[in-house]
Image (cartoon, rainbow, N blue to C red; front, side, top):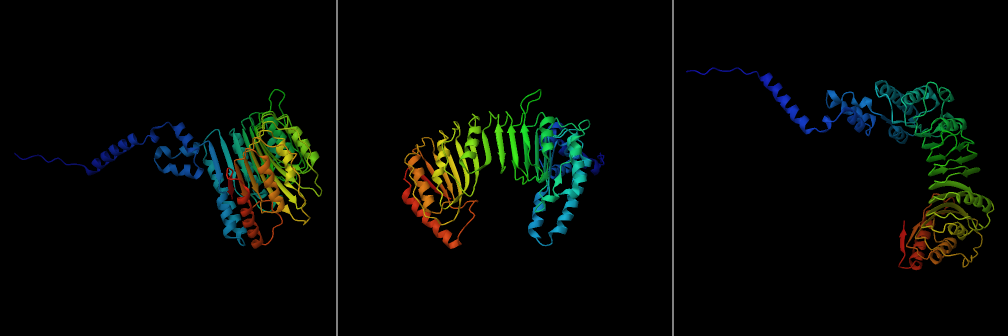
Length: 456
């Protein structure tokens, strides 16, 4: 009896095999089995370009990246690379890259489908020529209740061409709701005093405000704390603003402040302040005023001071105490007739200080060195780590190290660095290297064995 042959369809078999393999892969692919909202959340940790590449994974992934709530539109590395590789013919190439960037961002925003944004970040070398596009991007972000808005328009050498934050956006509160903003960062963007005060009044959730490289900022007031919607600002930075004349800060929730003003700084009502970075004129009156204000900040633990030299400096008298300060950093340009021992008054004003950092640049005027008597200065019973950058083995350097070794009775580590960003008058390289070697030999003979000596 002959057997009946059964005809098989190879195409059908292939489809069945692919279906079984897909089912098995789905069982192994736990990520694809997650709900869409979780996948979108995962994609928000990727850059826009990385997120867009996931669209090739399967039909389900094609549009997921378009719902990401974080748009980090950063192509600054490309911009910087062109300047590095083409220093002479870079302008034309940069203009081409700017056009590409604007087109790319416009395309991303046309495709985007999320109704809200957690983060919106623009980072590229744009200027006032692109104000229409930048303003449209801001409107896009603000219309989606963005929480973190960063505009970083790195533009070298031409501050007059900085993009200016449009005041007309601030007058459209009936259309644009600023109440969702929690973090606001402007870099190489001109922002007015009025704009800063507008954000503080109209963004009740604002916790971080950073403004750097703005030429229009002159006398801003960062004040609040009373009324029906108190200021909740915790982090404030206003730096590298060439037109800044004065700054007043009064905000009860602030924990971190970094401010660089070369004329007047008024600070008050900051009971939660933990870390402060400021400039101060190098004289007794200005330092006393600053320390008096900071003595009302009971939680202050870190203070970084840039001392701004004058033609004549005087001795620093006894200063008000900072009872909880644990770390003090001082950047300082000294003249050859000055002594670093004068900084001891600031150390003495911090009774529980544990770490002291001094970055000292020297301006040489070749005056005779006079030894300073520091026997009357009170010993420091908590100071464990001292870092001294700018040590070259000069008499003034050695005098300061002697003082540290004698008065810091629990010192555990001495860190010495020969280089300092503030060094403004340097000798020839061979003289400098000889001085460094000499300084190293001096310290190895001077520092006791129980103190760890670290030479950077």
